[in-house]
Length: 220
Image (cartoon, rainbow, N blue to C red):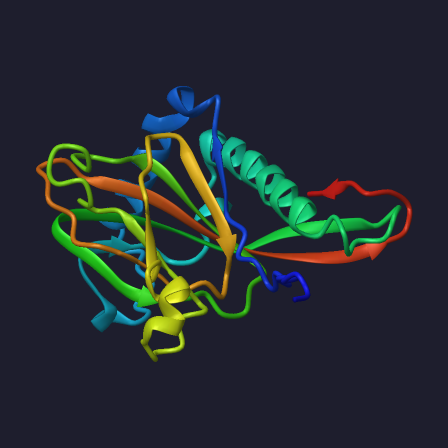
C-alpha cells in the first residue's frame, strides 16, 4: 500500500516576546492607563461583550509619554519580526515593509471582569502586552487568562474529528512584560479574572504594507 503523505495546510502562528525594558517603564505606562480612565477616555465599542473592565479609546500609543513611545517602538519591531517569520516563504527578496499600529488601547480589569470571544477585523496582526498581571497567579490556573480558539473547529464532532476537537482552545499564561502576537482574525477572549489587584494590558492592531523593493527592513 502506498505510504501516507499528509499535507499540512494553513497553520496558525502565534509569537511571544519579553520586553527587556519592562521594569523601567511599567509604572509610567500603568499611570497613563489610570489617567485615561480618570478622563473617561473610553471606546464605547461592544459594551455588552465585556464586564468589570475599563477600555480606553483606540489611540493609546499616541499618548505623550516617553514610556509609551518606547513601548510603541519595541512593539513595532516585534510585529515586524512575527510577520517576517510567518511570511518568509512569501515575501520576495528585497521587500521593504511598513508597520503601522493603527489601533491601540488599554484594559484595566477588576475582580470579576472579563471579555467575551471576539476578533479584530480590519487588521493584519494583533498583540496583547501584559503591563501588570495582578493576581492572575493567585487563584486557579486559568484565572484571567487570554483564551485563543481553534479556527478549524467546524462545529461537528465524531471520532473522525477528534484531532481537531480535542484542542478547541489554548490558554496563554503570561508574565508581566510579555507580549503575545497573533493573527487579527483569530478568535480570543479574556476569561473571568479574580483578584484584589488590577490586571492591566495594552492591546494593539497593526497593518503591514509593502512600500518599495529596496531592502527587507522595518519602516516606523
